[in-house]
Image (cartoon, helix red, strand yellow):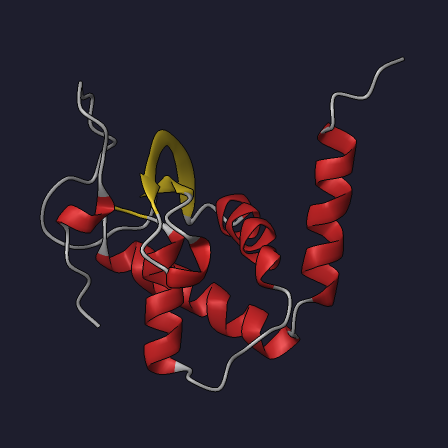
Length: 130
């Protein structure tokens, strides 16, 4: 029996979630829902930015918990992952690829269904109204 790394990834995500600050987690969940209401597609930089603006005291030492946070938002049917990736704008991420997420609760103008497209989605094309 071989392990393809999935169990190690799941274990790491579970540990990151358990060690994240509970106040940060709650603020980030709120931020994720607020961003998803305002943008048809987004990435975690949008959530971090919204949280920093509205909850400047929300911090955690376990920033890897953003993965489990997105998994939780998807489980809550707030968003779903797309196949698109963009480079992070956060300095500490060193422009690493971040997944683009499609909002399932978007209520703004424009598209409310996942577009069929030939070009990748780029959430930086849409400004987030804080």
